Length: 176
Ligand SMILES: CC(C)(COP(=O)(O)OP(=O)(O)OC[C@H]1O[C@@H](n2cnc3c(N)ncnc32)[C@H](O)[C@@H]1OP(=O)(O)O)[C@@H](O)C(=O)NCCC(=O)NCCS
Image (cartoon, rainbow, N blue to C red):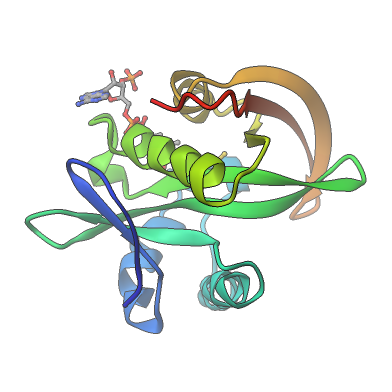
């Protein structure tokens, strides 16, 4: 399996079909998927995983598996994707973690590593996180990752209008 990034406590590697069960524990949990308008069906999980695998093919990046060092458990997903925004496409850091591993700083650690990857490997001028207006834990991760709220756009997803805020950080050559 292709390892992408390492932090003090985590590895980030490409997802594979063997991760399906661990992904279901995240994507099929009603509380976790609140900002996505509820838990995913089996078909939606399949499509989600297929989308990441085709992103690796097309871009060389996508959402990656977050692995806890020591236990080797898949505790979340975090990575870089191209996302539609106001008629264009932007580079985004996304994160979704298993609820059992929330509030321990793992999402922030993984998001910071993705920011480094965006600036140092992809040489991006800026990277963002796009967050539903009501998703405060996700906004806190974006702010702690050095981003500032820049603009808002209403996304239409699963037949619902969802205002989203875009948090942005620019590449000033100094990543922490
Ligand atoms: C968004 C999400 C990943 C945030 O997870 P999280 O656990 O709150 O974020 P972190 O792992 O960075 O943990 C931060 C919290 O851990 C605390 N913490 C504990 N130990 C820590 C440590 N060693 N380092 C940093 N923070 C630590 C922080 O103080 C912070 O507390 P707070 O929640 O009271 O502000 C999580 O809520 C999630 O998976 N949500 C569902 C999917 C989703 O909506 N994704 C975002 C779509 S835009």
